[in-house]
Image 1 (cartoon, helix red, strand yellow):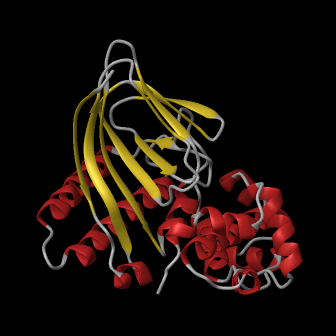
Image 2: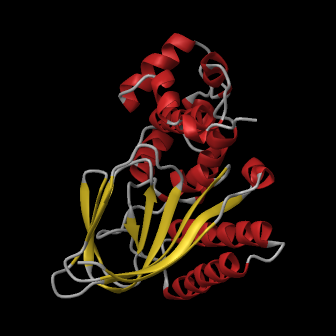
Length: 293
């Protein structure tokens, strides 16, 4: 089944935007017909995509899981990983979406996807607010005023912050079952980790930031995020390392050191274990994303 209609606006970010802003790569509104399947499994794709289901029904297959899709739900994807969206036999899907990246992008994704929820809902008031913001982004990329990059970064920051706040406050169901809300103490510990991921970190040190005993904090962190503290630190460090490998020409030893790995051989071993590829081969596969300047 072909797409019934699709509106899309693309953007090539400036070097200034790449330095510190969230920036859109493309935005659009897509209407897929019944029995339609969209599958992406391209390791060269990068950035993140946030979609709002406006109408219809279908399912998402990602992260070795399947989620039913219905109006009012959000889909949040790391485009480096494969996914598949299918519509139902009787009705299609209408999606309002934004493909984006930027220095803060991985931080927001780690927070929102902490419970491995690629599909979620938010409270009704936030749903209306976020939908209006996404429509404003479509308009911005269509008319492209001089202030577009700064304004779009502001809007995307507001959108992602609303989603994080909704999760923290426990206002909406996340996925098909309500995941445990990330309380303020856990949120503070996540921020602490993400601001100091390139430094040596200890469990008792992070627990102290949350104001909890090491034992209680470790249990609550695992329950809230799905990871142990050290697993989360490792996952976040590797995410930052992948970004440096794909967007800079820093020597691999410097990438390792700047993301918290003091030993390059240990970094290479861990990278290969989690990513199934060496850092050098990962860089070669993403060479078109590196800065040639």
